[in-house]
Length: 186
Image (cartoon, rainbow, N blue to C red; front, side, top):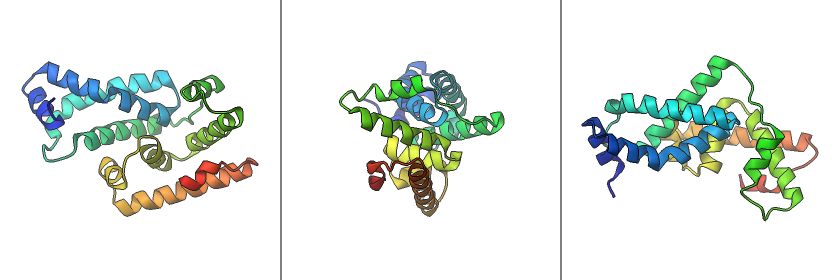
């Protein structure tokens, strides 16, 4: 299997199959990331298509010695944040969508499901800069260095934003009357 840099090189030479392989490799991750940022499946799907279109036309700006995955996440994050700012809307997640998210973990007991929903609501209520680092770190499992590269910010800023986001989440959950045990892992 070809590495990302080789696929980018081929795509720049107008090999559409190479770009299709890149899209296939990352479309699920980018959709999941955008879904967690936006809270709406349809919006995330539309935005994922926009991101991959934008990436296609900006491939010539990718530096071959860079990490393609980090570059792609940065493009997705920037596009998402720009769109959220443009719309100036708060993200609303319906109960039905929260159930769909939890449907992936049927072994969870009812109480755990409620707690996860509460945590997700709290994450969706964070300001974009904090929500972004939480999603990248704890949902997409990126390292601090990868988040730093993705967001083009210093690693110390990533650490500071995560610290503040965790505090905001803890405070919000405590105000709600329940403290989610897994927060101690965050």
